Length: 304
Image 1 (cartoon, rainbow, N blue to C red):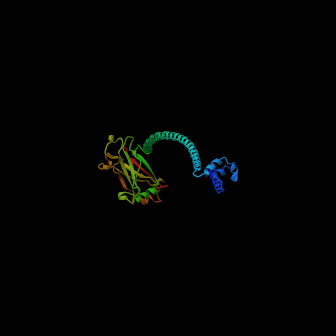
Image 2 (tube, rainbow, N blue to C red):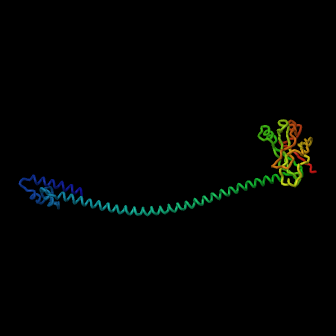
């Protein structure tokens, strides 16, 4: 339509110029000639063009206004159609957003439920771990008690096997391990509970030169029924594993010593032989006190 308007304007200008240039001819007569002026007879709008050439004619402006109005109406119509499409799209998107919001809300609620379940399970796991730790402690105590029961003697005679003597002697020299305690044993089934304590590098007057061996009275289950102080003779023996020359030492308890009174704590102060055996003799190849890095100590308690 714009191209047509431009063409009409050009044609109108041409015809007007031709009409003015013709001598003795009026514009109205020239425009009314059929077929004159470059094939204008083919145009259906010749009358309008004749009027446009007249001075003060408003037809071109009206035509332009009409064309612009048509264009505006067409653009408005297209925009309305597009607006309708966009409104439909927005409506669909609103429904999708509402649906998504509902799903998100449901997911959040489910997440809260899952978090509560997880917290409950974590509490249960912590409780089970605590129970398991308690059971482990109980099993360890039972194992230790069973081991002590297996190693315990109830007739007043106890044989103590010490392994890794070289390492333990070195630990005693460096001070890493001061002394070693034996498992507990008993003078009788319901008798005194006692144990041995050995210092491989010596203690007291025998420190650094002798192996020291001591006797310890422990707090037992039947102390209330036993006579005090402890008055049984104690005999120590370091066994020669070739059965040639055992080292033997014995003593009778000092009835005035606190070491042989009824124990108030788990153990009384140890008492025995600080110079039980010279270290040179213990390590001498002439004797078999230590063989395959192992030695045997024996304690005998008189029952009468």
